[in-house]
Image (cartoon, rainbow, N blue to C red):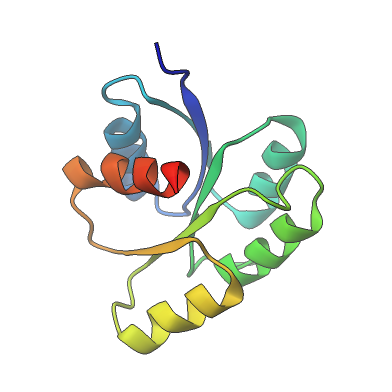
Amino acid sequence: MTRTRTILLVEDNDDIRIITTIALEHGGRFEVLPAASGEEALRLAESHPVDLVLLDVMMPGMDGTETFAALRELDATRDTPIVFLTAKAQSTEVQRLLKLGANDVLTKPFDPLEIAERIAGTLDD
């Protein structure tokens, strides 16, 4: 049996965080560690090993790109795949995030039925 992989989900919107958690945990392939802010994500990343970070771009306080940079500084997440979630679907925004070093970029709204497959694909690359 395949081991359950742990996803650190960083999303300030409660509804999106809940829907994404349900979508990822359905089927038992993923366990989700939810964080409502970049600061909370950093604390969780230091204390819980994660296989992938799913990171919202626009958040109050520490935004997604600042959180991304901080995660890359931590030994625990330096090489962990990071996928951005963004409401900006323009190709320039997607390219900007990929140039930062993101492994993938998912645009909101996303299909909850497809997000687990996208994440699995990123982990299998």
